[in-house]
Image (tube, rainbow over all chains, first blue to last red; front, side):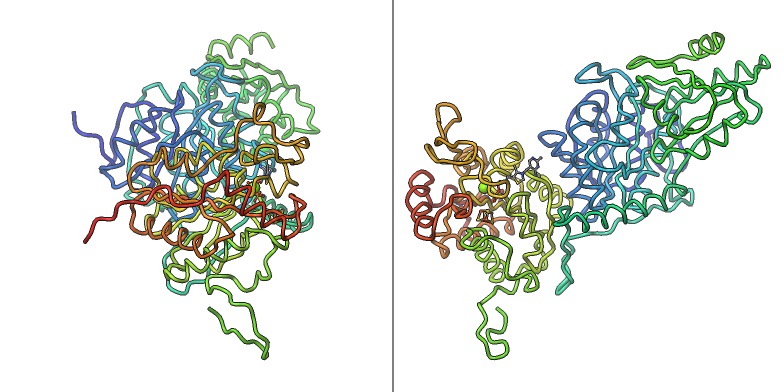
Amino acid sequence: MAEVSLKGEQRVFMTGNEAVAWAAVAAKVDIMYGYPITPQNEIMHYWTRLAPKYGKRFLQVEDEISAGFTTLGGVMSGRKAFTATAGPGNVLMQESAGMAEMMRLPIVYIIQQRGGPSTATVIYAQQETTLTCFGGNGEGHRIVYSTATHQELFDYTIKAFNSAWTYRFPTFVLGDGYQAKMREPLTIYDPEERGQTLVKPVALVGENIKGKQFKHLRNTYNTEDELYEVVMANQRDWDAMAPKVVEWDQKGCEDAEVIFVTHGVVSRAASTAYDQLRAQGKKVGYFRPITVRPFPDEQLGAAVKGAKKLLVAESAYGQLLKMVKTALYGSNVEIVPMLRPGVGITTEEIVEEYSKL
Amino acid sequence: MQELKENNVLQPAMPSSWNEESKPHKFCPGCGHGIILKALGEAIDELGIKDQVVFGCDIGCSLLSWDFFACDSVQTHHGRTTPVITGMKRANNEIIGIAYMGDGGGYAIGSQHLFNAAVRNEKITIILCNNCNYGMTGGQMAPTTLPGMKTETSPYGRDIEQTGAPTKGPEMVAAVAPEGAYVARGTVANVRQAKGFIKKALENQMAGRGISFVEILSGCPTNWRTNAKQTWEFIEKDMAQYFKVGELRVPQVKEG
Ligand SMILES: Cc1ncc(C[n+]2csc(CCOP(=O)(O)OP(=O)(O)O)c2C)c(N)n1
Ligand code: SF4
Ligand SMILES: [Mg+2]
């Protein structure tokens, strides 16, 4: 078999974790910091195999708190740096994510969700959606891409670095154990060969320039007013950014009576259910936020205008549902939840749920 | 050093690596933090490394030094300065990374980071201010609080049966760090010596030999509720008796 490389477009058959490692190479990432946790491990396994061949580095640290903060160190010194985790590790990484929000540090986290709460399962869930969007003692000033396929894992990992370094907010790729461990075909490529621009990192501190103007970075403030100014400035930047990064996908919402609202890998089941039911002449629609933060509020609002019901399906107990309700505040479309914390959702199950409506 | 006379008034000597705009500093009168940072400033001056230094400070009274130096500086979270500086140094080897923290930051909430940075022999310099308590939060018991010492959370005196004996940080680092580590304990009661230790700790990092860790015994008169005489007595007698001052690990330097 020919060796996998980023030269030209290459059709490959690999796990999602491997796709992420390749995407990080493709995005010209300098260094990864990590701590083992299933189902994320193989990102580190592949990265540690690939890294030396591309002059990249890896540091295995003592826990996810350290993984988050060492990654921030890498970012501050002007390197493209990332880490990856899941479940309880995602919980521990929220401390560093908060510092990144406050200090506007372009860190990238790859999250392969597993069951929760606690240790739960190492398999799959969508129970880290709220945590990943709003973890920490702040306002959720971050970007979260919820992927559904391996191609998206590859594409959005590359994009995550660009978004992070453009807008300077912590950026998450929200995958899950299914995407992490499953194998499927995708095309890997060198984004620059495709004419895509890779945003260059800039050193915030530590550049060795004689007589340079030194910088003092902090996240502590003395007064309420000082803090208010900082948080509101970040909020304004985040609000200005939101329409530029928000992404969603929709099908058939124009004349749909029932619209399936899902995100991540569940949207694959919803998409197939949509195709099958449409083929039978059923007036169904499909809406999927790709960025769950910022959430496509307006787009969802417009899409459901003519619908009678929404079927909100997720592998969590109401995390997407809450976002949908917030987005649709004031609308009187009926929302039917299909909540399956920690378990997968199939096309058949969505079709069945639809037939009960 | 800056010009000593300004408007014909003699100014206190200040290391040129200090950020004059943030002086006078924000520590309480009689606090040891300022003395440690003066020694560090002079060591940076003498080594001429101001432009390569990234100074990281923890949360604790050390955070008051976030704009202390005319050097790139990063104020981090409580206990997380070690990983931040580690990550920086791993990503950019040219940086001279200094992690400055309190005993709570280094020995309690960030102890896993200190321990593992030592085990991995991270090429960074960690300077830790041991003032036997949590200064910033109002004088609670710290890992370093002496047996019988009264703090806000040990109001009847630290009972080591219940709370364990005070942490000996340099001894711990010296025990686990591989060859190439530099480990010492200094005191604000002997600034010349402390400065020498700090300078060696920076040189050790510059030579890329291994981790450099210096604990400095320091005073917190505000929370100790001590006057100047009592403060110095406590540092020089009580603390120094339990925490032995000196060098614990000095790398063998091959004769060139
Ligand atoms: C995660 C977290 N827990 C607790 C605190 C509160 N806190 C701030 S400073 C501090 C103790 C500082 O003590 P030390 O590290 O010894 O520094 P000192 O002030 O004595 O120099 C604590 C517990 C915090 N900022 N963050
Ligand atoms: S509280 Fe103690 S450690 Fe903090 S500045 Fe005052 S004297 Fe120094
Ligand atoms: Mg202290």
